[in-house]
Length: 231
Image (cartoon, rainbow, N blue to C red; front, side):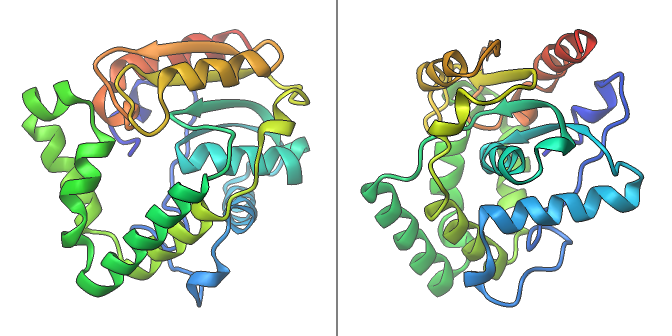
């Protein structure tokens, strides 16, 4: 997710696989996955790296939900937050039904059964039409995932708490980054979320969908560098 962007940052950056994703070991059961559990595991990862105080956290989509949870559980650890392609609201009943259907298909047929649907939702139209190398990269990222970890993540996404009441209480600097063609977390909704966070900055990345760090790493990197220079 971050390998194209991290080299462009002017500060030390750490990126790792979440529990159950990529090379990271998963929880015992899909029911053990939650946004709160991801937040606790994030702190557990940081401490051995020597980042046992505060850090700037940057997350895409579910990563944003984890940052909200860090602000609830471990506010002393958050120096600033960068929220990319995410939202504060919980899943609607319709969205929860959609998550359950995706879980059922994934368990029955594996990641190959859902990869095309996910790619079409995750990437901007211009990316899908003009940048086959990015489409291929994201497809492979999806196919490489282990089904139990993805099912657990879908459970965590479905049951995540409403972070809307938290927005007005955030006291650290925040940068909100949206994609101009994001079907999952539309830019208009993200701008509304940014307005609810005291002093938050808002940036729209052109020609990008839900995966701005992959689709437009230079533009996202420039926005992050500009933000960090102000801290």
